[in-house]
Image (tube, rainbow, N blue to C red):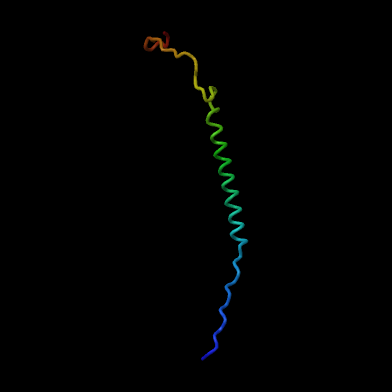
Length: 70
């Protein structure tokens, strides 16, 4: 019988590429969350009334067509 050869060990995996990819994805996600937060904060305060809406009485009187007066 012949001599059996020892199995070769696979080369070690270079994890630096996956580490850099994970770091860049984390930074991208952090930037995405920051942009979402910035967008949400502007919605409630973009109108002069804020998030409450208009709290004054509505003017619902009758008008004469074409004159614009009540």
